[in-house]
Figure (cartoon, rainbow, N blue to C red):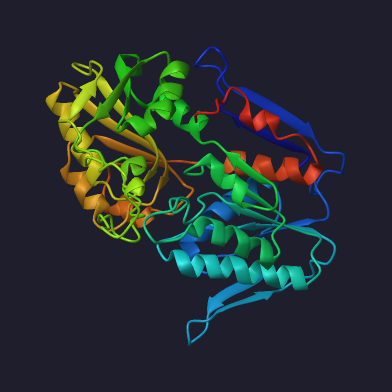
Length: 385
């Protein structure tokens, strides 16, 4: 194609405004706009290659020829079918339910490309796995840091991801990380697909999610409600269990070292700070996996008078019995992006809707390959998203 056209839903001070841009191609008609780079998919399942196909279609390039498969002994094997010497390689890897297999596929492909003399290897990982394990819990480990080190060792030199669970995760990497945002697409969905969205209120299902909810509310010019109480279990409130040795008074110890005994935490009864009566309640979050908390929040909001409940999240993992629980709950609709494949869950639950974010991922690839600034992709996006 002679033109690469994109229309990204970045919101200006007017919520209904969208911006489009066109980039002329210096090459002849019929030729690709870029040279010296290839796009590969590191996944062995057909459902996970759909996002890679959408991205390459928008870029106007072919998906790189490679074979990723599991041997009879469950070892991951990768066979790159074309030369990548001296080229910039983008590896698109979506994460299905079998997280560990997907990680090994990414690592093995990155290492195969590194040993094939690829110039740069850039991972496009829309949902970064193990991102919830980015803090020390009891006697566990910070697995997200381990994964970052493994990716660097395998040969990756750059990562494009979306809505990391904690933005501080970027500090675990020894190479650049572009943490894109899905909020413009979700905000556009609210404006175009939710009738009478002006009568809605943005809800944070826990105090830890209040900043994200406030960012949505301010850009949509809507009210804000925050839920707090015993039904919530904020990640920051979990005991980290660092009691080694156990907290017992040692009579042989120095009497001046006795520490005051701390009282256990006790959460107050469930409370909704904000008026949701007669309103559309829109709960926003970054990940929806185990949906019990969302179902409980929807029941509380219904009791408080909300007549419709929407869940907006970037990554729809929807594990275990999530589709059935959503179908039987007071939730009217769950809106997630296609960073994680969830076609099976959609067949089980018609309430699940999908927003395509391949547009911004393709534009990020194009800008990185051309050495252009990424600032445009963060236009009118706040730090709290």
